[in-house]
Length: 88
Image (tube, rainbow, N blue to C red; front, side):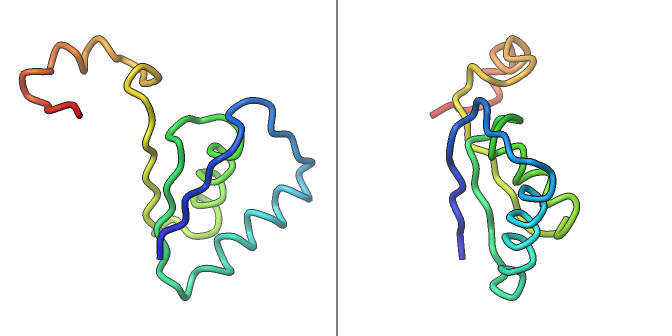
């Protein structure tokens, strides 16, 4: 089963108890489904929280971040390698 987790990449603030309950439930509650998680690929907001939850509660679950090319660190290096990488 694939879960697409999207939402605001900006200020998504929960207190630690709320965040922990929600994300622990997300990871542990889906464990038997052999889930894959897909996010927007950035390290902010709910996408950051999903990555933290995966690391803490279910590090073997696949987590795929799909984001626009422009958000990635070292984008110039990726562009330099363009002859080796096919961009869509």
